[in-house]
Image (cartoon, rainbow, N blue to C red; front, side, top):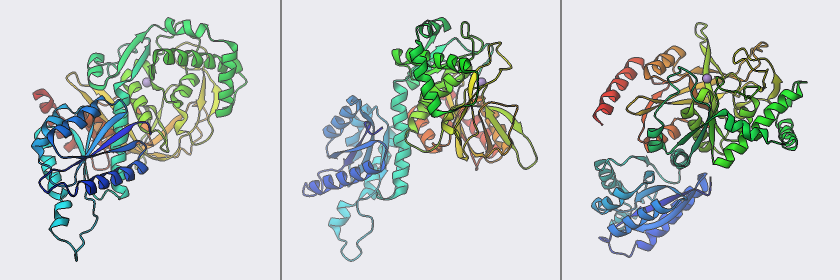
Length: 487
Ligand code: MN
């Protein structure tokens, strides 16, 4: 991700003379270098801007630079905001307003008017905030001293969201087959999704894929089997069933890479010449970063690809997930999430096992799949639904817990969790909000990355967490409905 750049732009003006410009430029470079050392993306100082033309020029250049994924602004001194109007009008990259000050503490004994004039973001950044608010500029504001870890962490969440937004704008999703028949929540307006998020969602017949699969060689299957043997534990004698999945994986990967696709969907209602539902093949591709959604769910597939990209280099897993079944024991309510097969091993607690078992539905041969339990920890789950007049992202927080039960008759990968604030409240809110049964679950990302991403996309954002109250959430949904009808 270090090839992606955040531009650091410092505001000033000529009122106090130009004597301090060199010092302000040096401060700007120092802060940018510090953030560069803390963030997964590069932070580049673009120095001091002090005139409307300079501001417009730097934003115009940011727009034109493919590597630039966002801009941070900071007003070292007072920078009259009418100077920023032309620039803000043209800025197309995500914006973070860093409200900081070069000096951490007031030098009580030596403070004079020169110090005050050089360290006046306390009012310069307020002027900057006014014009952004007046112009309705979507941005993140982070306040605090630039050297602190908290400030770096908040900027990192935004930077990861900006990297995800950049990735989203170029994302292509391949759909093998259409939607699973009659399912509503996985449908949506692909034209609006391309306008809003940049996703190019293209449909293919399964025959288009099986044509590619037909040309996969035995040597290519052998290579894929070697990867399986290295990554996973082979817990089956049915090698042919595993080779079948290796064949699918090589074919799907070729298809995706040839077309520049970073995400895909399958549907078990449309498998035609495939003898098995792609299970292990999907799990391993998902592990390598390709987005996936089952049953034609292109929105969740795109979201998983974006969230995996955002989470690059972070501890934890990020994966396609489905709320499957509940444990409703009083005071110990939990949800067991899985899918028929396609759970990504990025969340596995131990080395996943390759097993072959019959599948209850679909009428195909017993598919090879990975079986494992998941790692514990704090997690978020996100979904995007199409409300008809807008997209809505719903995010809930949860704790993924250890599953102490063996479940010998359920040979699929699964995740067990306790939603916040409790299962009943979370589920009621999720259902009032219209959230899907498919999500992208992540133990690597937090709420901030997703909220920042939604803001960049100008998408409605609904959060269900420890502070959620079901009646307040219903009011929020009601007000949001009115607001979006006015937009
Ligand atoms: Mn499903």
